[in-house]
Image (tube, rainbow over all chains, first blue to last red; front, side, top):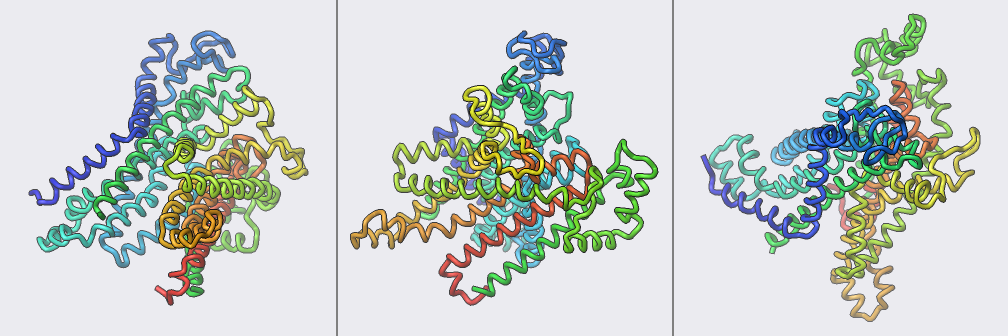
Length: 291
Length: 318
């Protein structure tokens, strides 16, 4: 069954995208992001094919200048490891972002739409989680259960959720008294359906901005935890881990640090530029709607 | 206004209590026998028994929570499993060292952020404004260790080998006895936080500069500098204070990675060591400490917000 509001919201959603795409920072950001994502996704296959080593990059010659970027202190080919080191980071970051956005949006919409006691309970629960810096909360969980992949994804996702929920709640409160919501209520549409079919399509603007922001932060947190030695574990090739392993020999063999630092930097700057363009586009649309 | 502040204070206290509950409940996640899990490979029957007694594992959960909470209130944070000494001794000097880092970075980034934001807003749409916005957008995206490593490459090793990249204070001497070693960690934290303050200040200041009372002041012939400092700035401070507080509270967490990177002998480094050693009581103490700092800073920000907002100042209560 379709309601009259659906087609109009579809077209409005696409204008946020189209508006954002017209901005220069969106084009630059998308290009930067695409380059690193391609590198990370294809790297694990490209590396062995190009250099002849397996993905651990073991070459047996410590601090040797063979190959594109030499070898590290354990005799592993830096370039092979660099190519192989982005895939897991990217996967974890995307999964953590997805958990945070889905959980946060659900909680925020429920709190904003329902109001009353449920609203206060959800938002007070949020306040408690918001009292920990995200990284510190992750460290607390890792201290108890050890550095495991599923735990990284889960704990980063869960700490995103209250931050997303705040945004989703605010956006929901702003639309919940609109005529189309009232109409849906008069049809006696069930709450779940109203939230999914009527509210959600109308709060995608702020949620997309939040998605970009959370993805940027997720990449940063996963990489930071690996850098701290508490994320992705050796002997896996990973950018954050590589920076920590190779920084002792920074002067002797700088590529082992520089390549992964550059990759992480380009990736996060790319996603942040796209986020910024989405934010400008959403703000522009709001201004027009108000006028 | 005072009723609003008291209510806000009570909310903070409740949140702090719930946080302590959460930090305690986390220890229940330890798989199997906590004493065995904490000791790991060093587990001998004697040490397990000793630790079980020390953690009071035979007592019911709520009793353990109450005795732990009681310890926190009386200033006894427990015993470190790694050093076998009290957690208080472990943290004493480190809290001071971390505070030096935090306060310096906080003051620097606030000053630079407010100045750059105001400057950007005054020159809205011009090249200077676009440059500041562009650079802060790029830096805001970078994880703190990426900024730190970039600074090490630039200023400490490869390009200009000027500054020490590792903190090597002789034991017993305070960290500020070697001010050169403080530069890179402080600079890293400042760079991480400044872009947010700059962007918020620019946005708020732009709005204020377009307002009626600023135009009125200009029409009265007040010099532009006075318009900025007397009329515009006070109105911009309130909303920006919240963002500043949020960022400063964020520093309490960001300091962990930065201390690890520069081997700075602070609380963050101790937290990483404790997580690596499964030193549960130290992890609990530090996470609680950081959360408490976070809550207090946010509370202060809200109070500043209430005090500087004239509408809230006169509102009876809501």
